[in-house]
Length: 393
Image (cartoon, rainbow, N blue to C red; front, side):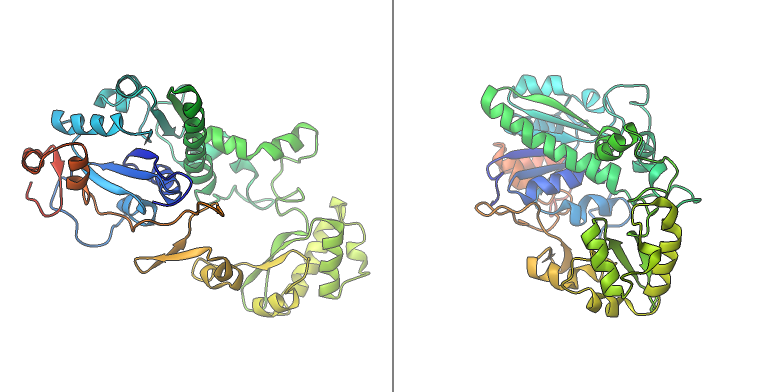
């Protein structure tokens, strides 16, 4: 393993979305992440993952090993507890109380391993009136005060994919929490529970906007502020070929460069950049100009400039952009193009250690590391406490 987390051992209780994303981030940076999967109810899947399974063992599942255990079977639970005993951290994404009922709650795990960092990743958190209720990204960012402010003026709130709640406010926050807790553990010798709630994380991501709102600098009506599509200098515009460009020329000198490249220097529509009363007319003017050329032509016009204009690329186009190619922003793993490890380290770079495993792919390997003999592993598989490819359950 390479990366700054090399030598760190993490147990990931299999989940969807933010939980595997957290595990992926940790694995990319060198941690030995072992995912505890459920024993499959039917025969092992041989084809590509579909539906919610794709969120577990698709790209998000890269970099770790998989052991399939039945946590309701005493022998499966015993193996999971042995994994925890030798781990530095554990991450789970169940509703509050589920791991306690399984016998893998913080009390049991920290009693077995007092140095363990126990990460709990949920939408609503471990307490509060909504803690026990179901939800998804959209619900969490709605309650956090995010969703109301995403979208154009006069329209409905627009879901920003599930980036804000699940991935930034959830998985990324959990990975940050685990990493920082491990630093503290290295000093104190004691573990602790990390409660990462997506509603909390989404609210934190809105800190700047809450600050602006608190001092009267944010209009709560969507699409009326400088950076929520209300202004002409921070928005997207359609091009002649049906593509789009992103314009983010907020600073006066960048705004001046924008106008220069567009041939609009001195146009009275842009004389008072920060006056909201002028924004609608200025936006209409820019929209008309951008429709006169294709996205590629505008990319040439703004190449190398400080006008803060960029082509709006799709997922199939982004990996081919020259800047992304030069930085190797995207990597290919098992024939699939995907975002590479982040952030970057000059001395201990991260790397994708392996493609996503199939469920139970490393069961025998992991159980052997825990001291189970081949004969004992065969017994565990035969009893249904574990599952391993190539062995009949």
